[in-house]
Length: 104
Image (cartoon, helix red, strand yellow):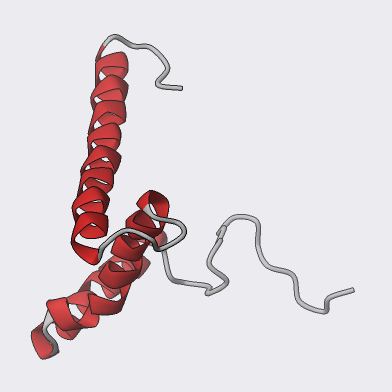
């Protein structure tokens, strides 16, 4: 049994008492601006972008048998299809929201 109990009047889902979700968001925003002021974002995100693109290359050529140019060409189309599906789902959700329906 715990010796100290937290008050149910001040819910804190992040484990830190006294920091609201709004303050946490603002702190994160400040940290992001500081990081981008010090570093080139293309360099800090290079590994993530490479992994994201590798996903599509593996999707279109799982055995690695295609020539690299063809694999990249197909991967770019797979990537474009991925983002087009996201845009379609977003448009549908916005339309349903405007109509007062459920986007699911």
